[in-house]
Length: 504
Image 1 (tube, rainbow, N blue to C red):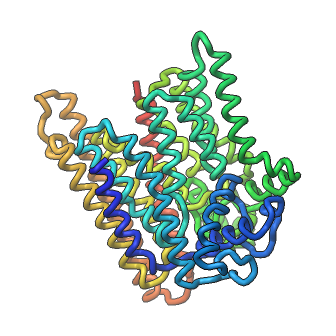
Image 2 (tube, rainbow, N blue to C red; image 1 turned 180 degrees about the vertical axis):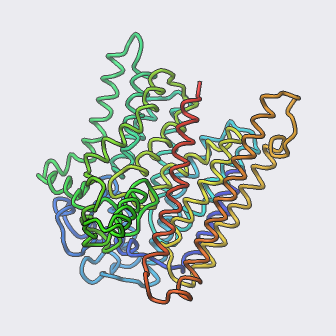
């Protein structure tokens, strides 16, 4: 625990230094939720329209905000004032909310301790660097402002119990997580198949299946029961599943649909240049924070049902593997892959959702040199894709230094850990291991070439675009970030699928 505590302590110091940084609208969203849950009866939580920032997280997160509002009301009553507190930015609210995120992050620290307690010291340190020092967590939670560390801590805690063979408790924590943030439900099929096969299958399968069902019903009853009692479930469901939103967020997450949109625009442009009567798009996919996507010019329209089916289809190899070979050692890899599928093919995905699989893969990264090389690439791509979240000039050095420092630490630490492969030496003169080393060096070389492309994209967006084009085509820098990072995400998905199929 001392080693994990040291890494957590350093991370906490960095988080404290970031307190004065830029705050996004999410800061006001969560402040408003403090006021909403503190000032209104529970029956009005999901129907209140005092602010545009309506409550759209599941009930356990609403209760979490309510419990945070209790000390907030003692520190500064304006924080929880529903009307006078709108856009409140006093030092009291800034410090309270910043420290609420810092303290809630210790859920993730505890989960990492449980996951790494049986690992050698060197591997434990690698996991801590990968996860507790993740630049994405610093940028999104402690600058932009969210509670991903707390939520990912619950996920990792669940996975730690599953790895120990304590399936019931692992399933319990996952059910709790879903009632904190429903977007984690993408991994529910993996949990269902794994628990059915690994926990229920056998002599007492009926009894164990009923116990799991009773546990799930109990968690859902605690979370949703009060809202069912007050007849508020319709409002809750409408808030949690706003399918009227478009296929993509205003800033496109780097996923498959970004490439789909670009392909549609590119094909349409070429056909119009050839003289064919192809309608030009009547609206931009980059316009507006939330809204219905405009129709495609060439490619078929994408619906929420289509994305749901595509996510399930992409998940199917993992589900088959979980059923045939339900080994606890593979559960983190399977769950990470599930969140990758949700990110790549899901409906209205936010760029921040990449942390749902990048953080768990920080543990998988210490399994082999191939996993380490993949994680080095993925963590950079994921973090860089979140750079546009911090668009103010004063935060630019912060995000660049955090990413570069973390990348250097990961590269140097993994090189030391897997040095015999990185140096290209034969391990025990085994030809198979020599071939593995050659393949990994090729992957590493391709990864470095790809990452150099990120540097080109950054130089263009920060300097050359304005110098050469002025105010013309202002959407191009963001578009380039999304499209280029999408290729990295698609590669990650393919790599993870390959490793899952290889697992025995």
